[in-house]
Image (spheres, helix red, strand yellow):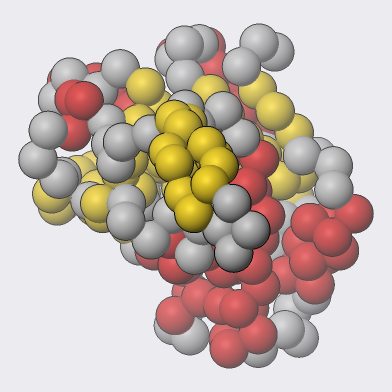
Length: 209
């Protein structure tokens, strides 16, 4: 699918495998999610524009590249997306942060909005939209819908694990956005959980049931 990148770095795959283990505790799970987000962010941000500035090194003066401008926002889908924020901020600490709060109805599996707060001038920014799991795609589609309603034109969605069904649904609904995936799993089960997956990412990040 166009605009979909499935990452294949062995370090990334190794860390995702550790996430899947049901015996991985909350603290280690949280650390792994941050590390994976950093590795994914490195790939997702490889096309950031740069500009030349003049610096004086211990040897001489030189024109060297730096990131051009500061128009970047990280907008996690609450609550599990929060676990990926610090990994991305480790790469771009000046990025602004917003939040999109969605919860999934346990019967219909449809997303419902409960909180949205975005940085100013969001329509001028590159928006990184992280959520560890892309299951049915409903929450991601609703989040992108909301961002586009606010005028956002450049959106990159990042997820650690995706079900084929959710990946197709998101791509079909928003073929213009860039999607970065750590791993595409087998399928969704009857409860709309990813198989083999890793369970509920939010519960495992925050230590809740």
